[in-house]
Image 1 (cartoon, protein in one colour):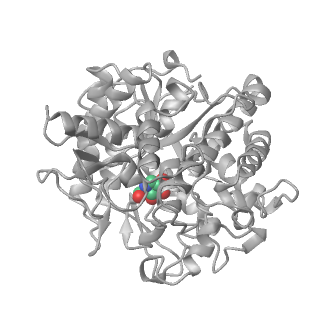
Image 2 (cartoon, rainbow, N blue to C red):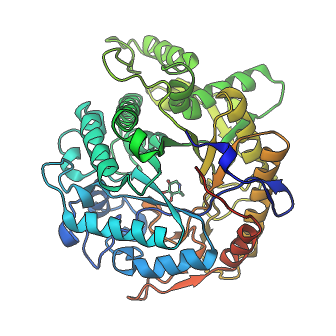
Length: 485
Ligand code: NOJ
């Protein structure tokens, strides 16, 4: 477990707060090297395949080069130092290390690359937080059923053990799976993310289940074989909006909000932190719909087997990705088709007073983060929390002087400070998303989340700090950031 007493309380900006970390960004080598998703022995991932299909990604763009951090890592390190970060979150590409997804063949070039990144970070006094899985399954495993197949969890465990063994002497903070909700729902219910599967009401539950199994196996492997020596901490990054009833006090909206929470945050947090099983209201809603549709053959929501490592208790801290808030009202579940939407029978609405920043799904609601942090404290027995992602997007005309994003970071970090100081939430770190503008999945390069702008039209991929990057550096310089462990 991460220990709080070793984190100094500091005189911070606006408030006396404990805050240890900052900044995040996805695997630099997610696709990377010039024209070369296969460069240096990397195997293809499901996102490489997805990008090749017409109409999947904005402007038919792809991540073959993206920020080209595979070649330009030193430039990224300069950005990290310019911001004064104490921690840096990056994601490994499974297919770069194990091209066919199995330990039968290890790509030594990939190992060398990540060794260099980790060693360079540590030499600059920056602690890495490494994510093992960030949406990009090796295509070879997708060809064998992907996350719908129970065996993928076992292969993930092998991959995780390989990473703990190879890098765990230096990496002390691990995330197994990033945003299982997004992988399951967008990738297997809506078909908007790779692998582009649309099997509403069925596949996402299976995928989420196998991801939880994969996470639990990896946590147990770390616990049994590496923890004593390596003394690190392992969790999974759960994304959640803050949700509240559209009409406070309206019983239907309150119930819909509970259902919506159960189907998002609860889906992954309940098994790990509370009961070892899915929220009851999730299962009963799914089973009631199955009955209504005359579907037989057992629950569409799988059950955890007693013969496998328990999922309960497999997080050393709560890793939260927070971007926005939603009001919820009852309804939306009366369609003709079996789907997750009809199962949860709840509808999201945006409060018109919340400004939208860039992408349509991202309403700016910094106080929602404080409320969510308090909810996590109260519901999950006051865990140590890392905010593993939070950010603000820009679309359209490039604005280097991005005043709004600067204000967003100030306001949000202030809310985190209040959560710590006034609500007693045990927040250990905050990672902004993200260091660089990057390939934003189905939105390609049209959406920019970076603290540094990347010129994707320039072969050198020049990095330019945004005003928000400068402001962010000032904010975090006010904290005396200490050891996170
Ligand atoms: C969460 C994902 O982890 C990250 O990859 C993505 O870019 C951000 N959300 C913004 O959409």
